[in-house]
Length: 154
Image (cartoon, rainbow, N blue to C red; front, side, top):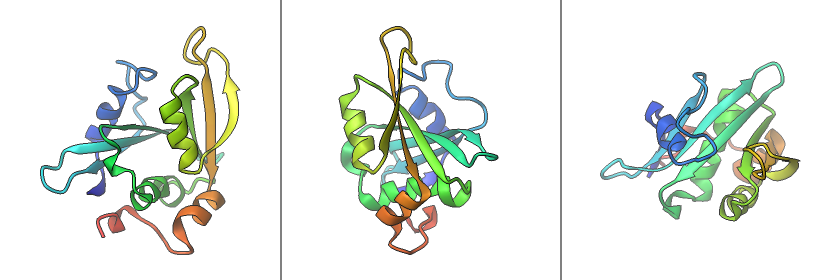
C-alpha cells in the first residue's frame, strides 16, 4: 500500500464522518489517501483543513475502510504533511466523545487530549480535542530522518 495526495480522499473521508456530513469540508483542504497496490482502492483517507499559517496549526480528519492500513510507517507519512509540507508546529483533531474506537486510535498514534468542547457537534455531542506537536511527531516517527509521502511506498 502507498500514501498519495488525492482530491478524491476529501469526499471519501467526509462521507464516512457523520460529524462532517453532507456539507463536506471547507474549500481549502488537502486530501491524502492510503491506497492498495493492486486495485488502488482507498483503504483510509486523511483531510487536512482549518490551516492557520500565522499560528502554525492545522486540523486533520481521518477515516478508514479497514484497519489494515495503519502501520507506523504509513501513519508517520500522513502526519508528516502537517510538519514538512505546511511547516506547522501543531496538528489537532476533533473526535466525538462517544467514539471510543476513534479516540483509542488517535491517542494510540501519539495525540494527547487537550480539551473537551461541550456540545461541539450539537446538544449532548461533545468533542475531545487532541493534538500532537512537531517535536512529539519527530520523536515518535522520524528517529532523526526526514519522512515524506514519496518514501511511503518504500
